[in-house]
Image 1 (tube, one colour):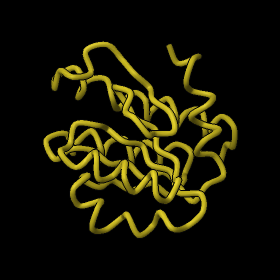
Image 2 (tube, helix red, strand yellow):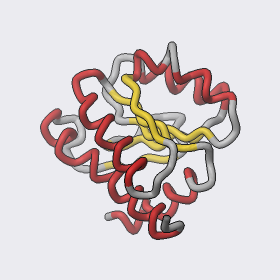
Image 3 (cartoon, rainbow, N blue to C red):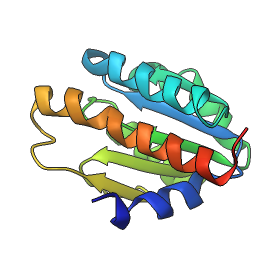
Image 4 (cartoon, rainbow, N blue to C red):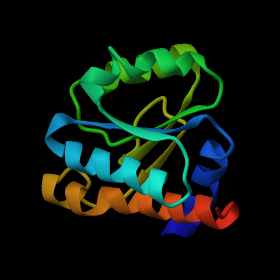
Length: 138
């Protein structure tokens, strides 16, 4: 349940430069919807990027303090992303399953199943957005 992860995830990203969302190309709709919820509800900077593209575009943003990434795992590029996380120590919240080297994970049952992931993973961003909005209404 959200009681186990929501407060900690909000603490991790609150007050930072924004929240970026990354995931595999085949679930890019979930990535975009997650970023949209973070922009619309708490009105924070949030952007979506496919994980392979993230390695060429958004990785440069990780040099700034306060960078936080919501990762929807499953891309063949996840390992490279985690390598940058280890080197630069930015916050990464893995959605669906735990991954080695991330700041925290929000696991859910059957996360390996594509249909389940598409239906459930956006709820994490929606709940996170609602919590950030509750803490700082605009």
